[in-house]
Each structure stands twice: as structure tokens, then as C-alpha cells.
Amino acid sequence: MALSFVFWLSFFHLTVTYFASSMQQQPTCRDDERLALLQFKDSLIIHKPAFSWDPPAHPKVASWNLQETNSDCCSWDGVKCNEETGHVIRLDLSSSCLYGSINSTSTLFRLVHLQWLSLAYNDFNSSEIPATIKHLSRLKHLNLSSSHFSRQIPSELLDLSNLVSLDLSYNYYPPTNLELQNPGLRSLVEKLTNLKVLNLRRVYIASSVPHSLANLSSLTYLSLEECELQGEFPAQIFQLPNLSFLSLSFNEDLTGYIPSSLESGNSLTFVDIHSCNFSGTIPSSIGNLTKLIYLYVYFNNFSQICHDDDRSALLQFKKSLIINKTDFPWDPSAYPKVASWNLEEENGDCCSWNGVECNVETGHVIKLDLSSRCLYGSINSTNTLFHLVHLQWLSLADNHFNSSEIPATINNLSSNNKLQGNPGLCGKPLSKECEHFEPSKKEDEDTESPFAFDWKIVLIGYACGLIIGMVLGHTLWTRNHEWFVKILGCKRMKKKRGRRN
Image (cartoon, rainbow, N blue to C red; front, side):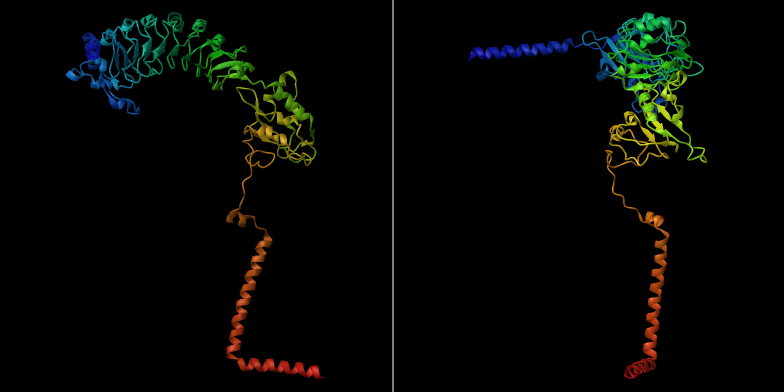
């Protein structure tokens, strides 16, 4: 019993000693870094109305002070310290309602142990990014987006070789925009080789995209929208092994093409190159991008090339019918659209054929308008029309299909909801069931024939006549009863005499 007591007493003593030691070892904020943070706070103004549109915006630095219960800067809003050394390693002041100028003397750059810094969504009054940012050499993440920085990005920023993520986007406030020209994009790419995220949207670059960008094998996110890029975009960038997000839109002088050798292992999920000057075709290998969710390539110079199977299906459909315009010479809208479909070199792309529209990204036929009054023949379940399984809009109106039944293979089109252009189609063989239709009173009135209207008049006249007759009869019976009996009696007597004779 005594041994057991001694054991538990020793265990309790060791536990208390351990926790006491842990409490004593828990570091607090360094005095010099606390002072640097307070001086940085005092150099700026808290201006909430500037970002009143941003609900998460709140002045994080407002709570920073030297009160006894709040003197540890490691507990301040937006601040995180290393648990072992007490150095400030993370500073998140995004959307903090900060307003004012930052220069090279700012105490912010004394926080040399910072690894993560965000000043996004503040207003630094068109300040240049100070050259003393080079002192933050341990930085891995830097976000200065939408913060009213301007002029040339300093070469000292390119000394931050540990950067993994760099976001300088949306610092576009004419006439003083953020620029990357001297040094330029090439220098940035060649020095910051560990980048995984690079967002320079709306940074004024006005140069070509260096081929060395394709050497950033760790890159997962690349945004160069509205940078006034020029020259040809390196196609190898599309094939970066880890690249998931690529946005190049609104660079009207940027040329290029999508490589035809895209592989299934490609990581791209988002590609936006609209409003550029890309050309060539959308390669069929785009279908290998199994992770791709968003592809936006409008307003370029791509030539649509339809799929071979779609082109073959259209040509066989054309051959299965007869073109006859003679029955409608009076109708200028009646013309045989399919007559121009052929495989000549200048007309081999079915996406350019009359009545055909393709998906600009995939080349599949999505719209077919053959309303013309000129097609004759039968359509059955084997018709190649029903091989066009990507159709979203189909019109065969004003033709003569020889009293054909609607083939069951039309389900090939409807099974994927590809007949949005024909919402009235329902019932077998379609998967859409017809709803029970009960015309409204208004529709009944609108659709009744003239004969129904005549019967109403007859009924109204009959009812009026019946009422008037009853009134007159009642009057004669009550007021001239005797006269009425005499007349009726005379008639009866004449009938009896006639029978006797």
C-alpha cells in the first residue's frame, strides 16, 4: 500500500513539473517585433468606408496595443508566431481597412522571419513596392493584390528566391499602374524558380511570354490576364505536369495555338484564353484532359473542325433523302441547305456547312437547322441523323418525310437532354412523358368553332321565346278565361259534328 502511494505521488509530481515546464517554455512575442508591428500600425490610417463593399473587411490592427492582457503580439489579430522561437512568421492583414503610404523605412520590413505576408485589399495610396522588401528573404507566400501599389516592381523582389506563391494582381489604377518591365517577366521567371502560384493579372507587362516559363515544373496556377502580352505563347506551358489553372484572356496581341499532343495525365482543370489571338484548330486531344472543367476560347481565330464521325453522319443523312425545290417556287425561303455539303478541300469542315453549328471547343455538331421545304424521303431508326448524339437544337420543319413514323432511335438524342430546341416533343419513343393538358376557359373560347357560337344564339332565342309564351299564356288564361273556354268549346263541337257526319 505504501509503495503504491509513493508511486502515485511521484507520478503526480512529474506531471505537474512537466506542465509547469511547458508553460514556462511557451514563447511570447519578441519585443523588437512587437514594436515594429505597433509602429507599422501607427504609420497608417484605418479607413473602413474605403472597403465598405467587402463584408469580411475589418480593422485587424485596431486591437493591437500594449495593455497587460494583450501585450503578447503573438495573440494579435492577423499575427502568428513560431511556437519555439516567438518570431512573427505570418502576417495576414488582408481586408484590414488600411490606408496610407509605405516606403523603404517602414518597420514592416524589420520582421525578417516572416514566411507568409498578405496586404491584399487595402489602399496604399499608389505607393511603390519598397526595395527593402528584400529583407523578408524567408517569404514563401506574398500577396499584394488589390492594394493600390503602382509603378515598376523592384528588382529586389526577385531576390525572394524562396517564394512559392506570388500574387500582385489587380493593381491597375490608371495612370499609375503596377508594371513589370525592367526587370521584366523573363527575369522574374528565371529567378523565382520555386513558384507554384503566379498571379499577375492586370500588371502591365507588354512583352512576350518567355519560353523559360515552361521550366517551372511545380507551377499549378498561372494568371496573366490583361497584361498586354505580345508574341507567341509557348505551347509547352499547356503541358506543364502540375498546371491546373491557366488564364490568359484579354491579351489581344498574344498569338499561339493549343498543342495537339495533350495527354490524359495533364492536370488542367481551368483554361481561359478568350479574347486573344490564338489560331489553328481545337485539337481532338483536348478530349484527353479528363480533369478539365472549364474551357473558354471564344474571340480568337480558331477554325472549327468538326469530328469525322459527325461529318460522316451528316453526309449519309444527306444521301438518304431527295432534294426537290420545284414544289415551292414561290417561297424564297425554301432552299436545299444540304446541297452545299461536300468534302471539297475548302468545304470539308462540316462546322461551316449551311444549317450546321458546332461547339467551338469540341467541334461536335450541337445545332442542325434543316427547315427548308426541300427534303423528301423516309426516315427510319437506322438513319445516321441519330448518330449526332451531341445535338442540342434540331429543326426538320417544313419538309416532307413521306409519312414516316418518328424513329425510336430519337432516344439517342433525348437520353442526354439534347433536344432543348424542341420542348414540345414528348411521349414515346421519347423519355419525356406528356403532361395531361386541360385547356383553360380562355383557350376554350378562343378555339371554339363558328358552329358552337350559332348554337348559343339558337338556345338564347329558344329560352326567350319560351318565357314570353308562358307570360302571354298566363295573361290570357286569367283575364279572358270565359272567352278562351268558348273558343276552345266551339272547336271541340265542330270536331264532334264532323265525326258524326
